[in-house]
Amino acid sequence: MRKRITFLVALGLLFFCGQVKAASPDMVDVSNNNGYMTVANFVDMRNNYGVKSITTKISEGTYYHDYTAANNIQTAQAAGLYINGYHFARYQTVQQAKNEADYACQLAKADGLPVGAALVADVEASQQQYLSRATLDACNQAFAAVVKLYGYRPDVYTMGSWVNSKMSNAGWIASYPYDPTGKTWYSNNNAWQYQSTAHFQGSYGNFDVSTLYNNFYTGGQQVVNTINNTVTIQTWNANPTAMLNSKGDPYMTTPLAHGTKWQGLGIAKNKDDTAMICIGNNEYVRQDCTTLNGLVVINYAANYGVNAYNSKGQQLKGTNLRFKGGSRWQSNNKLTDIPKVGFCYQVSTDEFIPIKYQQASGYQG
Image 1 (spheres, one colour):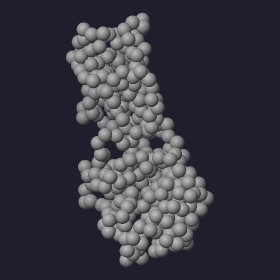
Image 2: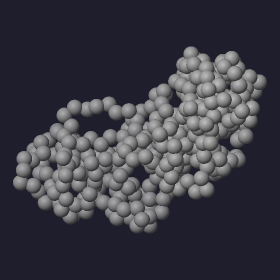
Image 3: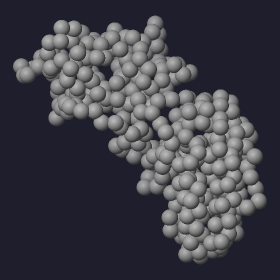
Image 4: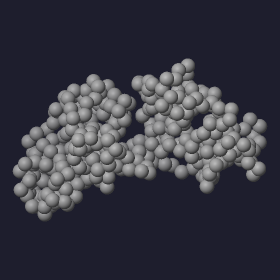
């Protein structure tokens, strides 16, 4: 069933839609073990590995302040990433939990962690393993209550073996399979840390990486959405245009009126190699009869980009610095079948953008 758009709805940034996604490095946590992270380090993670969020260590107990925290907060923000903090918990009583939370929050505030960011209790210390489940639950709740008073959003990180044994609830779970490919462990939680030995080119040491299943660790901070699947009918003489079937043949139905808006569901190749935009079940409109005529508008999140491919199907690393979400590029409306990639738009002599990254492709992020 096609969907005509009669009014525009402001959409929130959609990183996670539809099916549960398999393991991917959406979030990286950093600490003094990784040294001072630079803007270039984080830009590389963002552009070449798909990292969206950084969680930096703030503190431990009531005695240790991670000296890299302020730097990491500033450089992650400068790189266009979401930033959160974590505190390595040593508490064993409710009062100790309150004291540690106050200590962590004061340091986080001084380091520049923005209000609305997550501040996580990392609960896995050896001295906590002999506490009862009720005691640790009470401690975690006390920590969270103080965190909220400072304007941060609390969560608990722990290992998989402690969930439902040492504590009742945790939003971020660590459990490392031999091969995380295709796995979706702990998909009912906020995040799953699936590896602790990830490497990123140009960055020092091993990194913990996590898959995000919702927007908890990319929320509470301002973002701009550039994912848009709306398409508007536009003809040179403002006359209606024909609706086509999947073969490119016109339907003998009411034509599509100039200026009407439709929800794009996908893009297909017409008989003359030009692009058609799907707006319903076996219902298409020629791209050159829309506001996308002669254009590729990158359908991706703001502050992120997509890599182009060459005619041999090789990914051109670094081109995502140019092909940012929302940016507009001239094209001839024609689609080229690139090996191992599929149909693409040609945007320069040997640079091609896959059709899923075109506005109105139905891509959701």
